[in-house]
Image: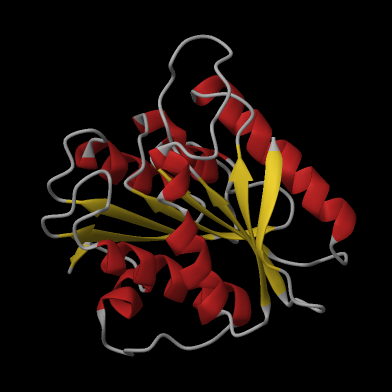
Length: 221
């Protein structure tokens, strides 16, 4: 497990950890920093750092090995590391894609975590059975995703509403890799992190993110 810094202000108000996806390729296969599931998170991390205006410390997490077994353990290890180096009480946001989105959801109740964005999350329905009281969660899925089930993502969102404030946004025509309409996925993640960690109002008070933050039925963009 390795935390790779994207932006480290001198006195950050909050921190964000960006989590990549990537399926298993056999037991114990290490993650390459050049694999597509890792590389696709670089612009997302940069977009979040830029949106933070120097107030967000942003890292990308490079998992130890491929697949789900290590992903959740790596996220929890990363959170412990950040708690040890950040001032006490520094709020943390998690932004994950695919299995990284699943790990972000499953880690929503961890100490210090305030908000979570799951992009095209690869989940099981029971992944929403998390005590995420006081947290805000945004799930963004592509309507044309054939890898991660939008139906399961919606089921997870429904379960999460038992404890957390949950918003769901469907990106029309978006697929699992987020290449099509990538700016929409990135922008929603960045704006949500800034709103929930820094308390800034969303850009459009009556726009899709504001509507999603209010809860209720999924919003489509």
